[in-house]
Every structure is written in structure tokens, then in C-alpha cells.
Image (cartoon, rainbow over all chains, first blue to last red; front, side):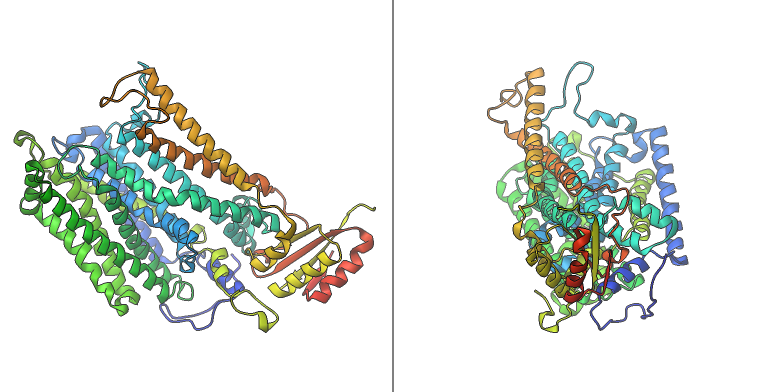
Length: 458
Length: 173
């Protein structure tokens, strides 16, 4: 790969001057250079975990769902917990690329590509869990809307069918959005590389040249896609929440669920963006593009969504108590005091207390503190889904259906392995595709003017 | 009138010089232009879009969205009638629409609308281009702006003069 100039800036060091257009191309191309040993070491760990994942899955298929700790009433347990968790992670990307695009939030430009990639990989990870959880995953085509041998069609009044539609639409539209955004950037990479790489990028760039007619339709299409994707961001997790809220199980049957899930999804999604972007910024030396201001903005979003989430937690407790319904109150009391109370209080600490440090401006711009908070938020949000699913199923209407869930080696391995799957996809992506948008970063820079009087922003 | 056979290309390093060249070319009556830019630039678009209708991509989006909406309505209503059960005390289909089917209709509207938008962009932008156009230069995806003027051979000298006067770094045929 031909990279014009080399710059040596200490990792984490500050960069004074505003980059020019040429700098952007050079710096983005630099991220595609052959990786070092650290990258391969990471890939080895990820590959090892992924191997364990497939072995555990194979064992589960061979020996049956009992090996995953699935027994009544705990038939959902960790798999659906992780499914909802990963779908939630997938929210930040489209929020950044669609909602913040329509609001013209310029700070989104340098993180949106990584966030969109994260969205697609997170939804792909989430998509594994229904397959794993279905047991005989080769019958997954049952999910498609087609009639069975008795001409019985899926029940479109069921939230589980809505969910299939919502998630497949979300994955498709996110992928479309992502690919459309990539086309001009791949063209830039094509024109900066040589040999076989150039030929591959040339094919992927669809012959993009940046001519006025191409830009004209591209910009209009991008705006329309953003407009279509904006309600999608809010709808996907609402539909996922109805998988629960439409059921009568105490602890699930609540109108609070849709906004509660959407807010939690944005909260965890931004935490995952930080978990991915902070190392990228450090190792790829992108301090000129992902500045303290970007970290500050993301931290503020985490703080706000965290506070809203805290409000929802209070509402959840209040509505259960105020309902006056015996079963609902019993379920709540059991959740707060019994077998899974530790999970509930872990969640309260991670989601409500830990983001409070972001009220402090220094914490919002400190990569280390942000990283720690983000990890805590991710743990907290995983436990939130756990606390919705497991204690509610374990303590519903009749004492003879009560039961607790104990994780097994098989399902724990699969859940941990799903992170490996996600990171494998992301680590692969950042070395083959521009993980920083060439075009959008340039759009935020002052355009080159010969006449100084016209310089600066228009 | 002689055939348009020649393309003169001016390579610019700055936005304001590019805009100056475009204004000048338009004033002299040259409308058959191709402008290459690394990013969409408002100043350049302002000049070019002055006499053009808005991109027709939005028609694709509208038709795709309506098609999705209609097909989801037909899918849900028709399949419900195939097995006409009363669920939850409600008839198989409600008119104009059963509330639970709104979810499916919304999702299909977004899906079809999004895919149609991309098809529109690809079709209208003439996108899968197998060979680069002759006036394309690989600097145009980096930090240079290009103005390609398609004109008759007789006028190529005057076009070159306009481009050079506006401040092009490089002018070639």
C-alpha cells in the first residue's frame, strides 16, 4: 500500500494543526497497513475463544438443551439475555448515523463508521442466539413467513413474529446504510493503493468517481435513508421489548418496557462504541480526528441515558408496588431479596452509580475513566436483561412452577464466545476497510480556499 | 453544430477557484460539465444545482415504501383469512388494518423503502461503472477538484483559457 508520508507522533500525544484533506486520506490509509504482533496476539485469543464457542455449541446440539441449563421454568435464561443485550448494543451505530445525521451533529463524523460496523456485527452476534436457543438450528427457516404443510401461516399477531421482521429489517437497513456510506471511502482507498488491493477495492467501490451527478443522487439517497432509519432505531428495541411486555408474566407485563429498552440500548450501545473507539484512537493514532470533544459528547450521552435509565428503574419499582397486585408485588419482593438480588444490585451499581462520575468534566475526557465506566455499563446492561428474564420466569403465578436457573459450562462458554465472534468481525473489519470516514471527516474540515477572505466555515 | 468530441479537464486545489471556473463557464454558455470532488461541497453544488430539478431518488423511496406497506398489508390480511381464527376475541382482520399488523407494515415499509432508495441511487448515478471515465484522476478522491468540460474541438482553446484564468493548477485534454 502506498502511503505518502510517515508521521511519528507518540501514541496518545496531542496534534496541534487541523488536518488537511490529504492528511485525512493518508491517515486513514495508514490504518490499513499490515498489523503488528499485538493485533495477531489479540486475534489468537479471540480465535481460541471462538473455537470454544463452536465446540460448546456442537456439544449442545449433540447432547441436548439440558446441557445449557434449560429446564422449566427457565427456558430463556442466558441465551435470550445475550440476544437482547447484543441487539441493544446494535443501537448506537444507527443512532449516530441516522438520528445525529438529521440533527447535523458534526461530532458524529469521526466515530460513525466504527459505530455502524459495530451495529452490524452486534446484530449479527445477536442473530446467533435465537439459532443457538432453538436447539435444532437447521430448522431456523421456520421463522420465515411461509405456510407449513397444513397451510397454517405464522401468526402475525405474535410479538415473536414482529421481532423476526424488526430485526431482519434492522440488519438489512443498517447494512445498506453502512455500504452506501462506504462506497466513496472505498473509492478513496482504491485510489491510494496499488496492485491486487487496488483491483479488489475498485470492484467494491462500484466505480465511484465523485462526479457531480453521483454526489447529487448519493446525498439525496443518504438523507432519505437516514429519515427511514430514524424511526427504525426507536422501533427495533420497542418490538424486542414487546416480546416480554405482551406476555402476562409478572415483571414483564408493563407499558414501561418500550422506552425503557430503547434508552438502555442507547446507553449500552454508546458504552460499546467507547470500548471499541478508545483503543482504535490510541493504536491508530487518531487523536487529530477523535478528539477530547468527541469523548466528551459520547460521555454526556452515556450520562443522560444513564440518568433516564435510573428514572425508569424507579418507575419500575413504583409501578409494581402501586399496582397493588399481589403477584406483581411478590415477584418484585422476591427479585429484591432472594436468589438473584446480587444481580439486581450489581446492575444498580453499574448502570446508576458508575456513570455519575461523568458529571466531572475531567472524567469525560479521560480515556481510562471512560473505558472503565463503559465496561461497567456493559456489565450492568447485560445484568439488566438477566434481571428481566431470569427472576421473572423463576417466580411467576404458581409456586409449583417456581425455579431458579444455574448457568452451566456450555451456555457460559457460548455467551463468552459470542464476544469473540463480535471482536473477530470488528478486528477484521478495521484492517480491511476505512474505519474512519474519509468523506465525512473532510466535510467537517474547513474547505481549501485560495482566497483567505473566503476561508473558514461556510 | 459540430459534435462534442473533446473533453478539457481542469484540476483545482481550492474550492473558490473551482467555483470561479464554474461560474465563468456557465456565463459563457458551457453546460455540459462533469465536476469531480472528494466530498460534496455546498458552494459547488449551489452553482450546479441552480437549473437542475431535485434528484429523483425520492420517487424511488416513495414507491418502495408504498409497495412495502401494501405488500405487508396483503401478506398479513390474506394469510389471516387463510385460517380465519378469532384471536383474543378479535376478527381475523380489522379494517382498514388490525393494530398488530401495523408493526409488520412499518417494518416492511422501511425495508422496501430503503432498498428502493439504494436502487435509485445506483440506477440514477449510473453506478456500477466498469471502467473509469477518461477524465477521472485518482487525486479527485483525495484533495483535488476536477472540472471536465465537454465541448467541440473548435472551442477547446477558449475553455482552456477560462480554466487557466480561474486558477486551475493543471489543464489537459
